[in-house]
View 1 (spheres, rainbow, N blue to C red):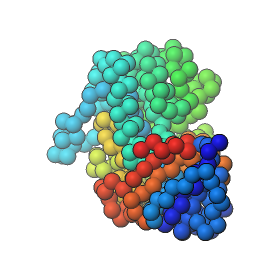
View 2 (view 1 turned 135 degrees about the vertical axis):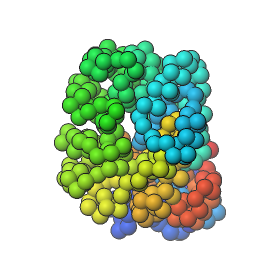
View 3 (view 1 turned 90 degrees about the vertical axis):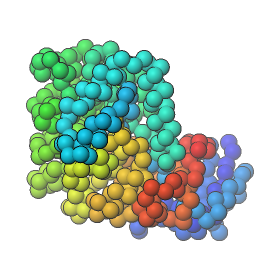
View 4 (view 1 turned 120 degrees about the horizontal axis):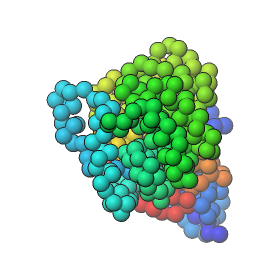
Length: 386
């Protein structure tokens, strides 16, 4: 098994939970990759020998971003909707139906090519693991094939048949479909099950039924909640002990306490607020209350058509009052936790060697230089991918 010494690292972000600082940052560092795993990390002067050597020229090395929330399987776009929103119209969940029509009309080959393009776009920006949801098919056939497409790119696939109720469909009948034939067809291709628990989509009673059905089929539950306004979704997620609940834009004190006490991760999606002009979630209040926070892109054609976690990091720092270290940790280590993963999101011995090299000396530059393409190279499982 070939080993590679990566050295002359100005700052190595390890996310070591045993370190004194949040990022476990090591200055003047090196690391050794052996096969697909990290074998050693430390100061460059203490580095062991290896079969190969790579000098990164005083750049920073970070764990690859873990994007724990995206909707990449779709066709068409909603640029006109975005333009109308920027002219003053409000965002509503009903726009999803526009994408549903285009996605149903697309071939498997067209959907696969589109996802491949977006995943590569993400990779060039440092994302090494991505979760991908269905939710733009809303028929048994189209949900199953959407997940089959997604599974070609990631093991983190999520069945989101409960995105919205299709037009001219009885809600009770649709819940029965989602928890019956659609779930049966989708489950072989999915790891997770999700529900859009919002006004205009599914209420908490419907969400409870759908998540229970998913669990009975071996799927892990998660929720979209409290994006469009206050609601019961976040407290339902905490009650059910979900790994993560996503959006968390409109929270009251009881919601925050429920997240803190349950340990459920609040996955914040700042690209949505950037694209919809809604208020940003108060990440500072969540962190100060002891809530665990992750950041993801929510890349989708309606409310956040951005694949850029560097942009999300910058927005989290500027608009959600996170420190650069907190934002980077949220997009790496906590993204991994939101997916229930302990093999990624960190660069310590035994972890997967998924990493990025920045054209910058520290992680701070991701927020300090927003919009600048700072990711110089990306490694996946110990091999250069970008």
